[in-house]
Image (cartoon, rainbow, N blue to C red; front, side, top):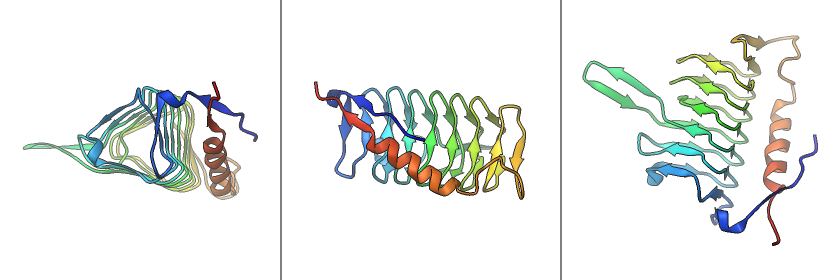
Length: 185
C-alpha cells in the first residue's frame, strides 16, 4: 500500500527536537503530563487530556483529526479516580475517534469514528474497524479484530488480522510520517 504525500503548512505545526509534529489547533490539556516519544503526528482538532492523568505514546503514533484521547476513570464511593493511558509504538488512531482505554499495545490500527470505552485493554497487533464501539472494560487479545457490528474476529486459521500485522503497521506508520511533509509555498 503506497501512501501519497500529505502536505502541511509549517505555520500550522510545531515540530519538536524528537520529531513530533503537533498541529497548533490541537488541545493539549495538562501538557506536562503528556509524553510523545518521538515521530508522533497529532493532527488538527485532536484533544489529549493530560490534565486528568498521564498520557504516554510510543514512537510513530498517528493521532488523526478531531480524535479525543482521554485517560480512563473509575467511579468509587468517595469520587472518581483517573488512571494513566499508555499507547504503544506504531499506532494509528483514525479521525473523530474517542479513546478512553487503559492501554493500547503496539502495532494497533483504530479506524475512523471508533469509540474505545473506559479502561479497555487493546493488545498488540489488533484492529478496531471504522465506527466500532468497544464496550468499557473490554480486553481485545493480540491479532484480533473488533468489528463495527460488535463482534471479535480472529484467532487461529482465520484471515481477520494478517500474520504480518506488526510489519504492516511499522511500514504504514513510518511511511505516513515520511510522507507528511511541509509544503514549499
